[in-house]
Length: 127
Image 1 (cartoon, one colour):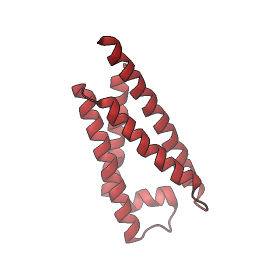
Image 2 (cartoon, one colour):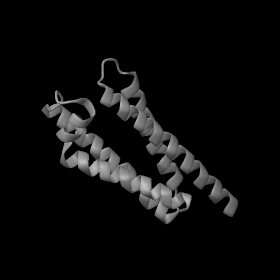
Image 3 (tube, one colour):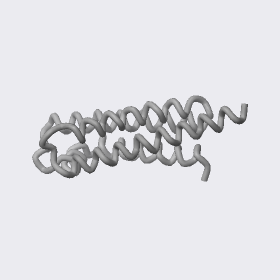
Image 4 (cartoon, rainbow, N blue to C red):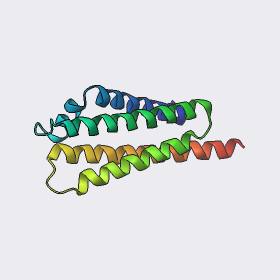
């Protein structure tokens, strides 16, 4: 599997997470932060997070498929994940499951930056 195809799979995963969060935000909040996070506010934030994920994933997948700026979309998605990771890992008194999500977000950021760099280098070599 080439780097572009791997990146498209990452994007589709992001879209899937976004759709789940938009449709079932309280479930997503409970999975990440525990049962005490069933408020209306948590649902709104969950839906907003889901929309962000779906938009970033869709935009990146389209750009990668069209070979027009996909590595830039991947890089911006990686920045979003890095910010999420920092928030989840540095905020005091979050439950362990939130810390695990922070580690996953950090790993996702690293993976996306790496694939974006590889795709960019491949594009430079083909010019």
